[in-house]
Length: 541
Image (cartoon, rainbow, N blue to C red):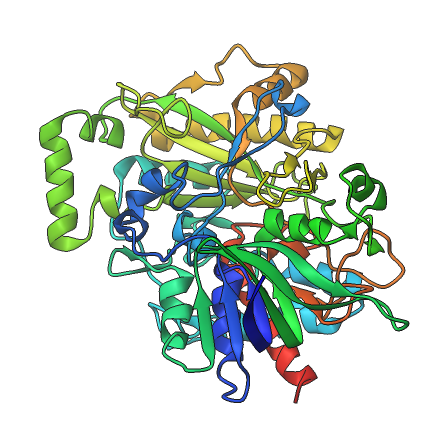
């Protein structure tokens, strides 16, 4: 085993959180930082063209190629489960939607951990700190930061009509989803710069890479954490990884920071002997710490993709149906970085309540001027739009468990979608609300006809069945290294993101969320990394 050197901090994973941490920690010129990433550089052209996510998801060059176990809540289906395997992580392959969630999400975290620093009023400055908002600085937005936020560079008549229809059934229009209350409908703001994807590698890592105190190693697979035990308890002292055909060991004088995401972080903890003891022993791993919460509490937003055929309006199904139209779309992007190739996967959003008893919106819509049977398949031959709706606060919980002591073996991902009665009830209500929007006067001129799941599903039981047939992930796994308090067996890290029971180790990514945020999860992960950097600096002053 070769030595890769000694550093003050080792960052495991060059994804969203890892890129932010690398930038913030290397501002301290006296701190040497190593960032290790299993994937390669983000120099693949399709990363940067917004519609290129179609070429990045399912591509071993940029995706871990995970899949879920067969899920009873989805009628026994297994889903592809994309996670970015490249600098920038999932920010290099995601939908680019800039979304913070609701104020209550963070207030709930603060109450759970008895740490007021996680309250909305206290994390809002962190969101603003990294933000470069197209509208300039304001009470709710920041300007001049690394994380560029822009309006989308297109508009669709069918989406404008959907927004009008939503208003007619009680979902008001809004101009900003990110002020703490995301009620209403609007086109999503996106992480783009002039029609080009703006990932965390470009935003945070590229500027930091010029600093002499940052070492970046790509194509390096971390096998396990180095854990030393003593009378004072276990301590993480570094990592073992392979790269270029060589096995390496790197040591951290201060801390090792695990930023491998909601799938990779619990997997690496378990491979290193930190996790449910029975699971570890099953795979021949000697437990360093029996931590039953590691890998549990998996949460995700399950989207129900309803498709409606329409008439007399432009949709992408027809626009992209022939070679001439495709060439025109390509030329529009080449010349102006606008048009369908600049599209985020979803353009119009809406936040609503599944029933009036909900205190805040518990549903999110991602509306698209296109339709297809499932991701990766051709667009339908008829004009249509998709209204995808997800339950923002699911009560179903799954887990991520290693399937082998081999670090190269994918873990078992078990989301347990729709496994609770409340989730099935919200799904039925969501389908009914979507039908009400489609039947509103504003859409009548386009004669929407439900294609999926189909009007034959009417009763509560039938609608729950329909949800299990059309439900699919919207790629927001979180919660598998849950933040909590000492003494709670389900907690993995404390409110400082330090792994409970192991010194010198923090987890900094979406896995620490005790409850999923009410919206897309990428920018909350940026905030988590900003906050972690502040806490780490304070600890080592």
